[in-house]
Length: 100
Image 1 (cartoon, one colour):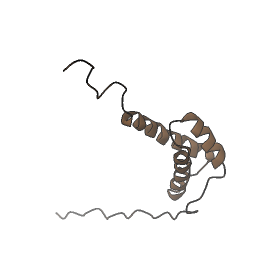
Image 2 (cartoon, rainbow, N blue to C red; image 1 turned 135 degrees about the vertical axis):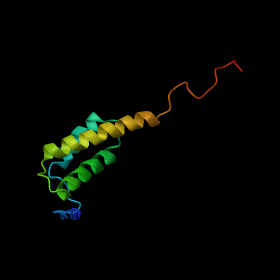
Image 3 (cartoon, rainbow, N blue to C red; image 1 turned 60 degrees about the vertical axis):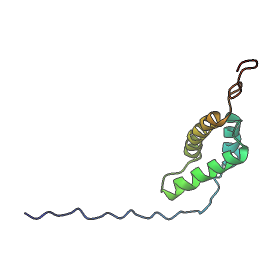
Image 4 (tube, rainbow, N blue to C red; image 1 turned 30 degrees about the vertical axis):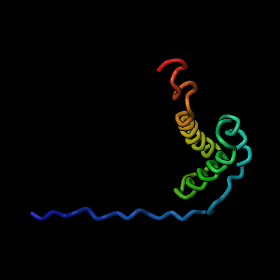
């Protein structure tokens, strides 16, 4: 009995259609998301929108402004939650006054 190994499948390279493209509705998307996430710097929001657009293009997805906004929002939710974890909690870290 001979065993046959499955042929190795090479991933298909999908060339980016527009390297570092900016979505046509970027200002509107960035403005809306920046309003939803005031703790996140606006430049980070802008970068997230552009990166999401370019990633979706690279993957060959049917890219729409609504898709980009929704995916960028999900990443910003995670980022905003991470910022909460990095902020110091008030009152912690100092020993109480008068106690030793």
